[in-house]
Image (cartoon, rainbow, N blue to C red; front, side):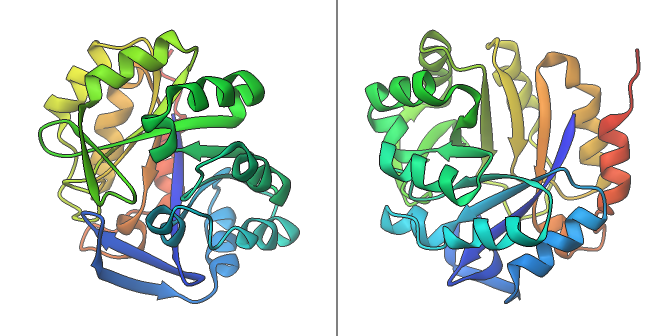
Length: 247
């Protein structure tokens, strides 16, 4: 299970939101390259780089930061936010993204999702952001789609997807911990491989997810808990826990 540090971007700065609300923005750094270097130095193999401006406007606004990081740091990047067409998928890959995260457009247009998977295979990944009742949100978490996550998981398996990012936006940025009961329902009902996000608040959350690894968890995204909190996560320790082989 890989542990992936998150860098969320607004106006080129590293920020975190609470429950996806833009008026809750807290800025941590004006230098995302330096932040990426910090996580790399602590053992990160991947970065979860999210363009929050792009997610809200529908087109990438901070895409050049991918190449800025890649020029100085040897690290893999999964990038999302405002990816609404094949041109923007290609653009992100050309900037150096190793994997492009699909969201709103892929939920609205299954033909686009199918074509993306067909053309780019494991270089694209769908991200599903859900609320307390399992309803999927889109447009930077601003709009409820009225579709439950269980329905979409079944559909994307049929389309040939192998892995998915799922984010509990009711807990994202709260440091409250994971809703393990709901997560188990997701894992038990799907053959997909999951990258988990939303609510990670302490090293205990990493340990609990590691215990569920054989249910289909291949990764966990850690955001605010790396930057603040009374139980602030040590990334090196989290990565070691994720890499332990119990077999």
